[in-house]
Length: 133
Image 1 (cartoon, rainbow, N blue to C red):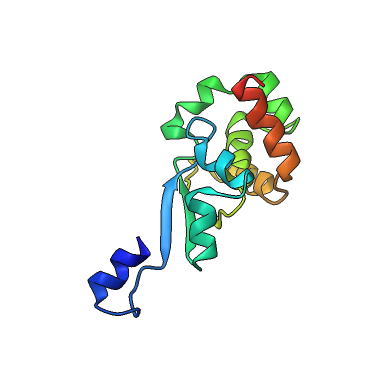
Image 2: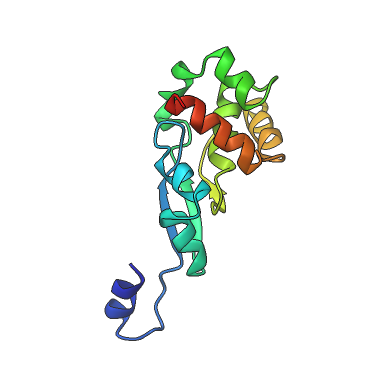
């Protein structure tokens, strides 16, 4: 993509500054790849780009899959939405998680969850559990 940006600009002076891609427990390949030190998020960070994770709740569909056991594995005491968002927001190499909230209470809940990201070990435990390992 950087080569295409340079080609489009006709020089190394281009305006391509960020990469956005879906990152969630449903679209978890970027999380797994980043935990393993590779993938597009790590490559984008290495190239100096800002990285954006979109659809952390997978359009709201993920909330139905967030069992109490899964929420407790992620972080006990969180709401399903906050646990799902925390997982996406803890992805290595991710700068920004794009989301919205319907109420101030929901926004505060998610902001509180993101203030203490999961460690790589905690995140790997979640992805391994979901992969059935």
